[in-house]
Image 1 (cartoon, helix red, strand yellow):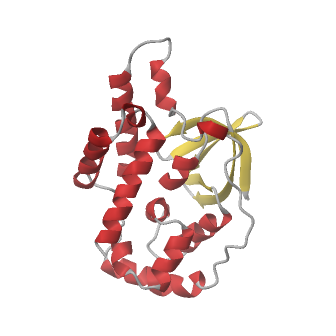
Image 2: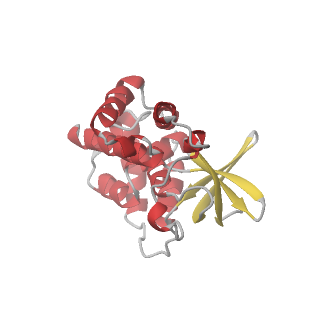
Length: 231
């Protein structure tokens, strides 16, 4: 059983990263909130791992904190909650916020997550409340290691602008496409994504528009604010 991995980020993709551990590349799916904090390719990272094994699949899910992994495993223990929905929840609600949401019976907030209806939200709160009451935040935490001032560095797609070519428009298109793909994979619809991305592109400065992590972080904040406003 893989409990955690330490290595270098080989590549960053919408919804996942590839971690190079002594020459072996591990594809690790992560909540989008964690991807916002992940270091750029070539830098070191350590993540807690939950291994998902089925007859036709073996998937690794990575988390920057021990408690986020605990929360992910608790979510998956609820009948009808698979990895995609669990990732969608933790992409907008970290473990501490999820715990408060469950203990405070904030059904409307959970309903705002793609794939969760009223009955599923009620079931989540019912099943998770006794577990969340025991969720400890005193466990050791592993976070991304020593990536200094480059924490929000250019995405993997920014390499398209190599060789001194002016490809700002193409780069922006690539960033927006990557963010759209990441949100779509979690179950968000175009009608939710399009206004958010349009607003970010309109209001952000030119540097922000080029950064996958900055655009993604802004999009998640907008989604989170919209979820809170709807409760």
